[in-house]
Image (cartoon, rainbow, N blue to C red):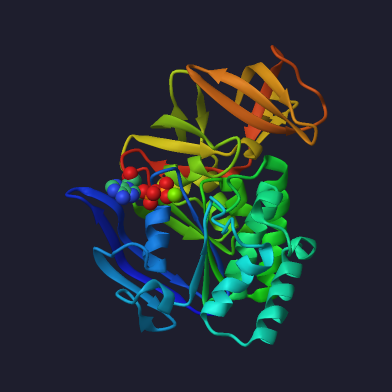
Length: 364
Ligand SMILES: Nc1ncnc2c1ncn2[C@@H]1O[C@H](COP(=O)(O)OP(=O)(O)O)[C@@H](O)[C@H]1O
Ligand SMILES: [Mg+2]
C-alpha cells in the first residue's frame, strides 16, 4: 500500500500532441481511484507514466514520498493489468501466477501459498493446472488479475480490464473487484471510459478530457456537483439536459427564456446569478431532477410527449423542445404514452447553472 502523487505530469508525443498535460493528483493510501474520460483523453498515457512504461516529458511521479519519475518499471513495485489479458499461453494458470514471484526469488513454499491465496480471491482455484487456451475470456482476465495481485504491489494499475468481457460478466466483475479491493486495501488506479463503471467502483473519480483533468471528486460530487458542462454531460445516463437561456428581469423576477420556454427562476437559484453579468446562461437539469406534476400552476412548462422508453424500474419520457430532445426519468407508474400532454416541474435544489462562455459552474 502506498500514496501516489502526480505533479504537473505531462507527455508530449512528437511535436505538438499532448497525450497528458499538467496532471496534478494526490492519491491516498488504499484509495480506489478511477480515471474516466472519452477515448483519447489521456488515461492510458497517464497510467503508463505512473508504471514507468512511458517516458515523462515534464513533471514528476511520486510514490510513497519518493520521486520515481526516472526509475525503471520493475523497481517501482507497481502491477498493471491490461484490457487484452496478456497471460502467457505456454504456461499453466499456476505458472502464470507464480512466474513473477519466481523472478523475485521468493521461497518455493511461499510461492505456493500466495498462488493459492490469490487464485481463491479471484475464484480460479479449480483451473490452476489448465492452460489459458482452455479458459474463457473472463477466466483469463482473472488469471491476469491474480498474477498482478500475487506480487503485492504498492500500487495496482488497471487499464480498462473489463472492456473485453460481455456486459453481464462486466457488471459482476465490478462487484468482485470492489470486494477484492476492500480485502487487500491496495492503492488502485482503474481506467475506464464507462461512467457507470466509474460511479459504481471509485472512491474518487478523475474526469479527464484532452489530456487534462476536468474534475476530481467522489461519485456523488462529480454527479450532483459537476464542475462544468463537460462533466455534467459525460456522467449520468441519460445525460444531463442542457438549456441555453436568455436572462431578463421582469416584475421583480429573474426570468430565463428561449424560443420555446420561459419561466421565472426559483429564488434559491436566482441568487446564484447576483454576480453574473452576462445575458445568457446554461441550465443543466438531470433527467431525474424533473418531476411530472398534475397541476399546470405548479409546473415550469407544459409539453407533449414524443416517446416513452419503459425500463421496468422506471420510464424515460422524451420530449421534443425546439430541435432538442429532453429526457425525463419518471417512476414506473402512472404509465405515460406518446402525445400525452404533461406539466413539468423540477427539483430546485438540483438545478445546475453554467457560464455561457466558460461553461464553468456558477456557484454564486
Ligand atoms: N504513441 C503515440 N504516439 C502519438 N500519439 C499518441 C501515442 N499514444 C497516444 N497518443 C495520443 O495521445 C492522446 C491520449 O491517448 P491515450 O492516453 O491512449 O488516451 P485514452 O487511454 O484516454 O484513450 C490521444 O490523442 C492519442 O492519439
Ligand atoms: Mg486507453
